Length: 175
Image (cartoon, rainbow, N blue to C red; front, side, top):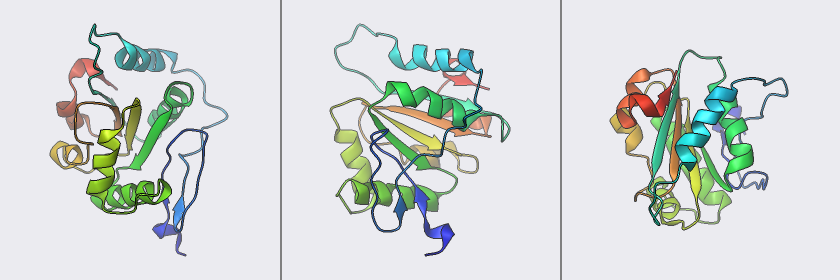
């Protein structure tokens, strides 16, 4: 199997499963990751501030900036203690998004198309987060087409592209 055909996915942090052609894990967290406590605190405030509503509404946040500054590591540190359902999606191209969603479907016993996987994720009752990592070249509209339907769940985007802020807002973004 060619290395290019493997996709990285992860759901249920800490409960790693595999299926044909899929490596079911998130990127490895760095053992030397330190700092960024303000960024992690801002993510916690954003995703866990009570809204006086009995129905949880979807929240979206963008981490953006140059490559190699720690956006992915901040996400890894944030989700390792917080969420029970994590869907890590390689958003570097439409092809990688589709492949990763198919891999999620396989690892969850769903099979099917990326659209059916998104529909399933959108139907989950428990809180989840979808991390769209490395969304650098897609337009905001192209990326938004791969958000699960409905208004539940949470979305965290990493990108070099500050234009993705149109999916959130300046106050729900961090450079």
